[in-house]
Each structure stands twice: as C-alpha cells, then as structure tokens.
Length: 94
Image 1 (cartoon, rainbow, N blue to C red):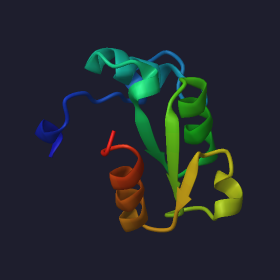
Image 2: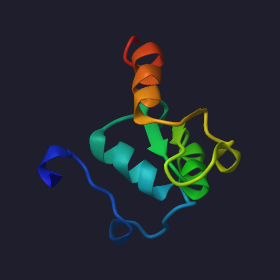
Image 3: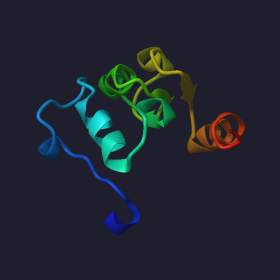
C-alpha cells in the first residue's frame, strides 16, 4: 500500500509533531505545493490545529470523536461519502 503514496511524513521525519504545523508543511513542500492548495482530512483536534496552522483547508470526519470536538475544521462529515461529495463540489470542480 505504501507505494500508492508520493510522500509519507511520520513523527520520525519531523522535529515538531502535531499540533505544530511542521508535518503538513513538510508534506506540502515535498509535493511542491503551496499550503493554500492543500486539503487535509483529519479526525482529531490536534491534527486540525496542526493543519490550520499550516494554512490548509481542513475537513474533519467523526470516526473517533463527535462534531463537538472537531469544530475548528472547515467542514465536518459523518462519513467518507460526505467528504467525497464535499471534495467533488468544492475542490475537484476548481
């Protein structure tokens, strides 16, 4: 499965992990992308905070926590189908 990813960033490849933005900044830089062109899918407040600090749009999914815990995300979904719909309507159509 790892061969499906162009870039993998783990806690071992950054000095400061979430909630710092370094993991997302490193991923964007490795892909040659501006942070404003990135969309992050997260399921936890620390990840949301990290991605927002990196200047990225954040979609949250309630796989582990309720919507109350994910309020700082730009969009909150209850399923991956909802995320797919959001991406098709708001990101992929650009």
